[in-house]
Length: 455
Image (cartoon, rainbow, N blue to C red; front, side, top):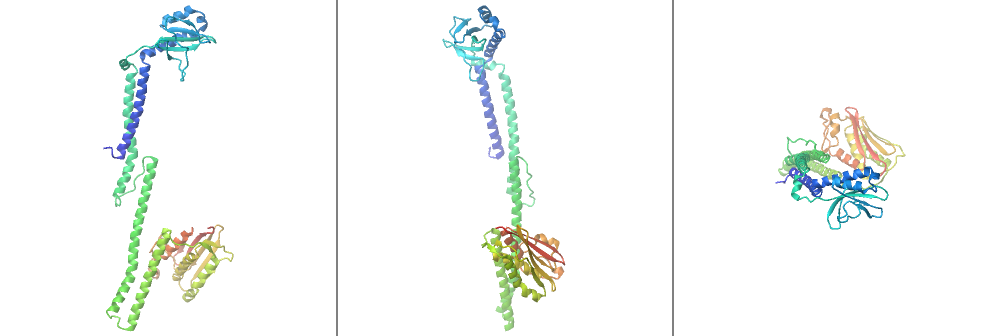
């Protein structure tokens, strides 16, 4: 019992409300005990007698008979003190002496004082003139404790307290549900994840609980995407490894079975085994490289990079391949291009990959151009080709791992494992840059890399 958050919240609210009402009840009972109905009636007589004197002080100053009439009419004791705190008039001189009145810390006019015999008196006082201080007093009535329950204030206080307690408990229950219900929905959704019928939890309740619900929904989306990415990754790796492993296994079997019975056949089988194993080795290295880049653990050796020299080296590296394919490869950059802070080898890997792809997908007679411009805060480096282009539906997934555009309708063929552009994007992002692409089928593709000039 009381193990759920809702019940604990309700119990906490009920406990706080009960404590607060109990304190109020104790204070009210203390007030009734110290100030019962008879005491309030005596205080009313005191204030009435005082108001008659203060309303017309000239009538009562130096007029003991008038003060005595007030005493008899209201059954009170009237005293007058001078500025020296001496009694100059006492309507009941045979009674024990009362002390000079003192205003209490709350500033109330009706107070209590004990006379010389220890009897408790109620009194009120006021200054009639510069030299006269009027005191109206009466013995405080002794009231048995049981008489407190007959006080006319007790019944409405008890009724009001019970109504307040019931309403407070209902309100506490509503508040506990308002806070706990959305949290229980989050718990239920977490316990049932993953489920095909699961939907995002509707945010409601306090602002903090709504923030938690939104964060939970966002986390579920990220987890779902991550799991899907992992499933796709495993499927893609399996698919990419299946073809070379099949080739290696088949030609190795041919060698073992002497199916490849001629030196030329054995040489061909060995060459295919070597090529496919090299392809698998390169893919393994690319996967390891991509994993390090995504995890932020890749060893980037940051230094000042001369982009003019780097881009010229890239062009020189691919010039022979471009001439062989009948493609014009040119560099269009200004001579005063500033240096960048980055890893020169990684940046060279980026442009090597982009130029290599551009040459592969550009037909004979086409053109590949590397250009760069300084915008002041960053450097924009573009790789533009006049190749077959990329369909619009493929652009959003172009930088995904293992994703390859279907060029079969354009007469193209499969190239690589689909990891190059994913690595390019990770390297650019590791340099606080960004990469974008625009393309039109049949008219070529342009990759634009933005790298910040500041470190």
